Image: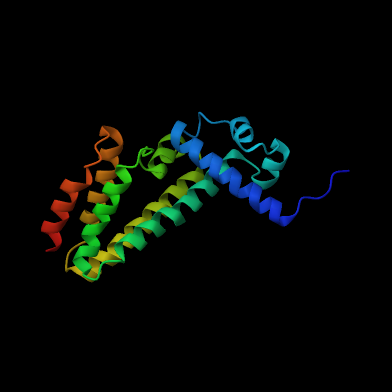
Length: 186
């Protein structure tokens, strides 16, 4: 009988699965990547994978949740370095421009997940909506501190820049959005 797997090993396996799944889902698409591909990359047996994530949908949700914490955390860290509240709002677009210029940029993971599974997976749809709500709340807090201006146009500019950069491949898509937001809040 094999020895039981320690909690440490489960944590390492979970992290390895999330890393591999996130990279493959983001690069190739969720539906194009089967659990066998995740197994092949990680070397973790399918039985153990399904012990950690009962379904592929569970793995997708976990990937999106972890990516949300890291993505919005990176944004906050970048924005909060600025003292001036208006510069904080504008720096959202600077951060987006840096993200768009990354060599592995493939657009918004949540929009991509929604496009693939949003109509068929209530769990994925809920995670996508939770991320978008949190992102908009994050921006709204910065806008509220900076100006007597509505936050929704700023959120729409950010979302539009993300989609534009994704579809066109233009890493500079955040620049015109930044200019428009500057006119709105200054």
